[in-house]
Image (tube, rainbow, N blue to C red; front, side, top):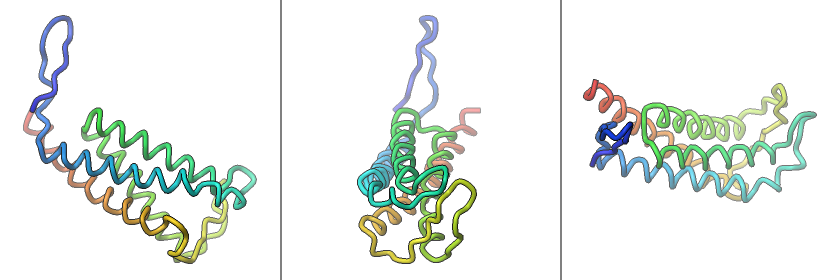
Length: 153
């Protein structure tokens, strides 16, 4: 399958998108969707925890919206940049939930104290698993996109 662009009446191939990359894109978008759903659904539970700048609930809403935007960007254009952003978003979220489950860092800059020393919070395990798998799949997608870029260069 080939994606194409039309410029000034000419037909220009952007690059071939492999079936494998399309599958990885769909899987990552679904996993980011799970992450977004959990964060947006549970955000209100965390509004009471806040710093002088923002609440943990607001961070949940930001994470949810960012996950949706990245999932859509990947579906529209799976490229090196979008795979890298997906890796940062999913990997960062997975690292944060794991870190703040085991380590009490207290408030960090404008962030409230995010420490929650349990995996029993609603949606937490599902979200963490989705984020971790999305990060791993993003690595595979990034590798495929880099190989495709080198092959067309």
